[in-house]
Image (cartoon, rainbow, N blue to C red):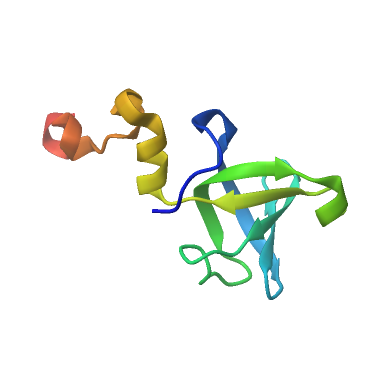
Length: 104
């Protein structure tokens, strides 16, 4: 895993539709109409225009770099769980919680 330069308070869970692509980033739009630039990385580089994705990302608003759009730097689920540390109850799977469809 890469060394994180952000904290769990900087992370957002976002769902958006991929609306475009360039060499270094994707363009996305959420369901409230907000537009984002999603920076490509080794874990997040095989998307296509029209994909509807939900993911955790470090959100950075830099007016100089991206014309006022928020830039999202996606992280893996494992990186998110590592940031949670002891507060992992929100990140546990149903299996880890001992829940299955039969006992719901």
